[in-house]
Amino acid sequence: MEHLASNADVKPSSIESNERHLLALYAGPNAAYYERQFARLSKGGLANLQLHGAAAGLGPLWAAARGLWGCFWFGAAGEIIALIVLCRGLWGPPGPAEAAGIQGGTVLVGLGLLAAVKLIEGLVANWAYQRRFVRWRLDRSLPTGINTRAAVAGGVLMLIIYPLTVYRFSARQVAGFIATFPTTREIELYAARSIDRTVDWLVLNFETLFDAITHAVRLVLNFLELVFIGTPWPVMTLLLVLIAWRVAGRKVAVFTVLALAYIGFFGFWEKSMSTISLVGASVCICFIFGTPLGIWSAKSPRVDTILKPILDFMQTIPSFVYLVPAIAFFSIGKPPGVMATVIFAMPPMIRLTALGIQQVPGDVKEAAAAFGATPRQLLFKVELPLAVPSIMAGINQTIMMSLSMVVIAALIGAGGLGYDVLFALQHVEAGRGVLAGIAIAFCAMILDRIVQGAR
Image (cartoon, rainbow, N blue to C red; front, side, top):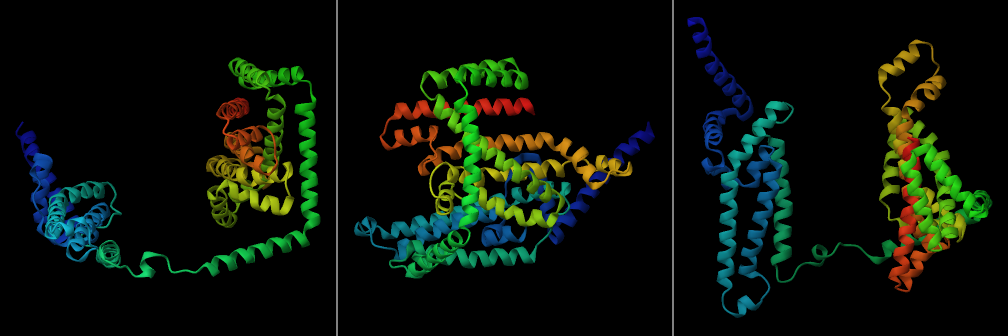
């Protein structure tokens, strides 16, 4: 019992010494001060907040030196607002307040705001520093003590942001190069003319290639339209329901029947089949070109580095912009609509194919290599089969993005259900637009459920 009691007496002191040691590593020379403050906060929480003089005086600079960038931006925003109010009261543009003779009141408000912000910065400092200490104990890679480089970075940010922002919102007359970006119209015109000349050169020198692509796309579209539109609607309905039932189950088959009934009863059958043909052609092209690019990206870090910014650009550029090169290179009609849809919908196919192959466990590949699998066998018999769920998810996303782009492609003559939506928008026919939109949604849901069932 005496032995147990002695151990119990030793443990708290050892724990406290360990805490002091960690706090000394974290806070440096000021460890004793922060030990007292952290103990107060641990006992009483926010009710025991105590003003930190240095944090209140230096403000965001103190927070930056200790890596508290959330406090830095909060304090900087509050101080800038207070300084703007203060400076507008001193030499800001004349207004009703000045006319009423209460400009001094604005100055007092600015001083009050600045004092309140400083008080909040001083009160919150120890609490924020304690929370960072807790994070540091779990992640020792976080900087400790006073970081000179971070303090210099915070000071530079304050020197840039404070004067320019306060001057912009408080001066009676702002310099033109600060109020508006210093540029000229000639830069935009020169860049636009250069792009126009490049497009004209490509059209003249690669006309045969673009005509061949247009012809190939039109052949695929004609075949798909022959299948979906030329086939009698009872036969096509039966085939789609059987596929849904076989791949995804009875519930999806029932939903397919109801969705196709809606499409047929409201007169959207032919246009819906045309839309599905456009989507089918786009998805086929995306799969043919996107899957090899995804495999190549997964196998080559250099290719992956090159493709990532290109795919980011393709996914962030507004979808309407894709119609411009499509018209320039392929004229108008369904083929340029398909090409614009392909460019818009291909990135998910590439990304998810690469992701699926990269996520194949390393021990599985090592086991296959140990049994003598060649790189080709490893790809086709191990990596691709295991990456099928991710690839199917890429196909699913490509289908959804193709359907969203098909509506926009109606602007250049792609037809389908997108034409009804566009017509309703131009003539402010809400009912027709809603009915066509529901038909597009049903087409998307049928394809989505079938693909998910295949997964």
